[in-house]
Image 1: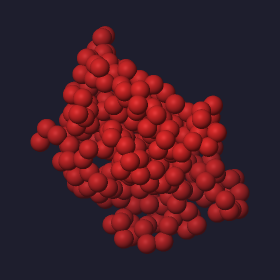
Image 2 (image 1 turned 135 degrees about the horizontal axis):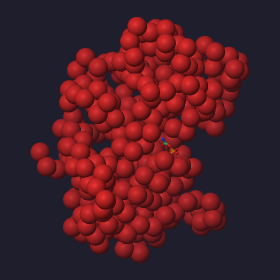
Image 3 (image 1 turned 30 degrees about the vertical axis):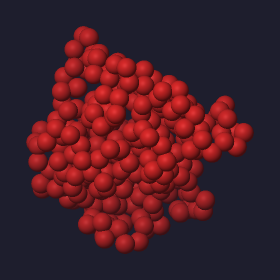
Length: 312
Ligand code: CP
């Protein structure tokens, strides 16, 4: 297989296992290039990509921009603050105006679940979802799974146990990771306080635990998620101190385990809340490898989707 089954990357849900494996294989090639003294290839020369961010971002935004530059694409960056969105312009009008300036692909982060899907039905360009509210964050899940594959050194995810720990309810990373890891054949558990785990999670084919120690003892890899206070309009737990004590991951909890598990976090970390510094900075952590792999994964996604674009 040399082509994706989709025209846009809206979520992991719409990808096949073969799509994910093709993205990984393509990312392997780009990772080799990124480790050379000259990191740039001409693959997307003459393609123009708009990075449209309606929500804050550090990693995803810089990672996409670097991926585009490494592929020799032209890029424009848009953030809602300081734009005509503040004057009442609609999402479709904003993006149609940007596309009128001969833009070929759109990378978008938006606070509304489904915003990228909506856009894909209303404009004529390839759309990549860089996170839509509490729905999906597909490139994060791809780089997470790619980093697990790299760290464990095996192609197959069969028998690999991944625990996703923390604020599952408000996390787009959790849903995309569940779809991605299940498609690849991994076993997945979600763990955290009952108030932060949606009902019927088992219907996604995952195990559920309300005890972090149980999840840590079960898993090979713990992907620790941020407490998303900005999305919480009610109190889901009494205090951050209590959350940290009962659900936070620290080196002491890791050291009680009989095996050395891999620790991940998509960032940004609330240090001392869901993850302590001694765990985040330990030799079990692959957090910065995740960030590094994000560029190769996003190069792969851009390259494979540009192939679907009418301009190439
Ligand atoms: N992981 C992630 O999406 O980080 P940013 O919000 O900084 O892009």
